[in-house]
Image 1 (cartoon, rainbow, N blue to C red):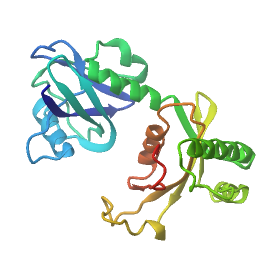
Image 2: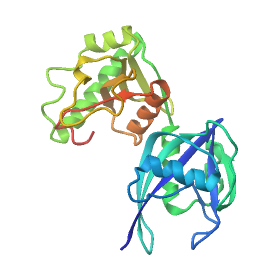
Image 3: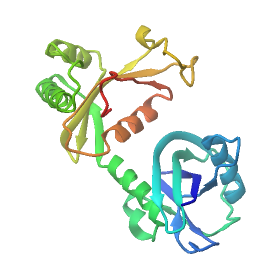
Amino acid sequence: MPKIEVVAAVIEHDGAFLATQRGYGEQAGGWEFPGGKIEPGETPRQALVREIQEELGVTVNVGRSLLVVEWDYPAFHLTMHCFMCSLPHGHIELHEHRSARWLTPAQLRQVPWLPADVAVVDCLEQERSFTVRSATPADIDTLLHLADRARHIMRASGNRLQWTGGYPTREILARDVELGYSRLMLHRGQPAASFAFIPGPDPTYDYIEDGHWLDERQPYHVIHRIASSGEHKGVIAAMMAFAARHGHNVRIDTHADNAIM
């Protein structure tokens, strides 16, 4: 089966997302997030800037990666790299699409999306089912419970070397709360995960073996001590969305045995 690799822009503006109706080909009339094929020698981000300029006549700011969709259509396999984007200025012009709509999160299901784009809508809805707030001293027992659940998941997956000796302890978690680093994630109002969101510099993140950070110069935040109840999908996506809103550069790693992460 032929393979096609494309990019898609999830353009958010004033709380709404841009949906475009395809105006050509076998899938004409279907709704999609705008984008197109990656040309030889292009990175996905470069391709996305070019495609949106060609299709909509504007230059987008390409933000964080949202997800990569793998989808089998009858005639080909599609790999679609999806990025959150913003419009710094200008108005869109439909050069290739039949129509366009700005849809609020509550309106996302009002158009007939192409099959691969339904996965993007699913992801956006999952992210918005979570809220993130600063943890308080009253949340310490909840943080400990989430850490216990995360430790159980690690052991069940064969990860026996991470978070040993009762780590993270009550004292460590209380210190995160005291310093304003601790974050509690709620899924429809109920505790689902926690993490520490710590401003750099952090000496342990100065160096990466066999690699480098995308931006070595700008200030950054570090994400530590991620704990999840394991009951909900989309935790990491929602966490990274929060991080992207509150710090342009984020550094994060995990233990070599943490295959799930």
